[in-house]
Image (cartoon, rainbow, N blue to C red; front, top):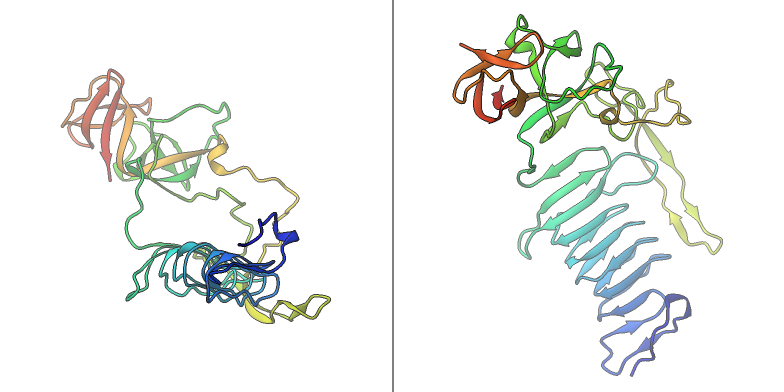
Length: 314
């Protein structure tokens, strides 16, 4: 019978009488066929093979963590390469990432079978996200974060009011504004464009179409004091920082700044009205940027209460 395990730092190699489970500093309560040959790697529970440096297989069965600094979490027959975090089952083999470039896959949810590998979800280090099926949300409109031409100096809540483009910025709409330039300030968008939530929009250099510019870099192998490889040699592409970027400046997301608003341009939106609009009728903005009944304009889906209607915008 195996001795009680108190912690990884105090472990000595122990094998129970069935010889199915092994416990040592790198293999914790695992099945036969398990190995963790990579430096500073481990397999904790289940069955897996971890030749990668500083990598881990946590639970699951038949997981292969081949790259450095990668993690397989539970599941069945997961494949990991460098800097991948994978969960689920039978995922497609991911592209390795690295700390010195923006290539490769970051997070993957596998949903394949023993006969056909596939992914339900994949997030790449480039910032691109891929899903096998639809992305669902409770909101019912597409919106873009747009800057107010007046800066919204009093931090007014303008939700439910019509807005119109004013150059690339927006302003409150009036009765003379053309329909193709109109939108509504959304309170619950399903999809948001033009949103830089984590970092300043000018952090990286871009071309005229907004594509991030990259440069190719290489790096040398690194070893620890015992000669173990902790960073293999490699190469990849990195985004180029702008000369105008100042990392010492704190960044406030656009959605948290009064000078930006969610301009809903497609879908179902709630609008403040003057009480004249009727379901199945049409509306347009009045000179207070509120909806008013009209012969043509936006279709009114329903009246919500005395001062709010739901319209369809496209």
